[in-house]
Image (tube, rainbow, N blue to C red):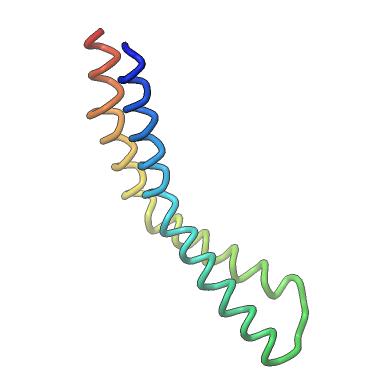
Length: 88
């Protein structure tokens, strides 16, 4: 395996990580903004009020997108990593 192959695998791995993490991070951002806005409007500054709903939303989105994430990782291994390791 050449240096170019390693860099290609690394690039594809980073791109795959970005694709897999985007739904969870987007939901965390949206829920965090909504809770922050709610706290600013009501002047309630409870720490668990931000943590528990965000954690719940992240877990739900992670569970819903688990199939997509695993298919994406399997595709990365089947298309990029395994052929380059076996080919050399």
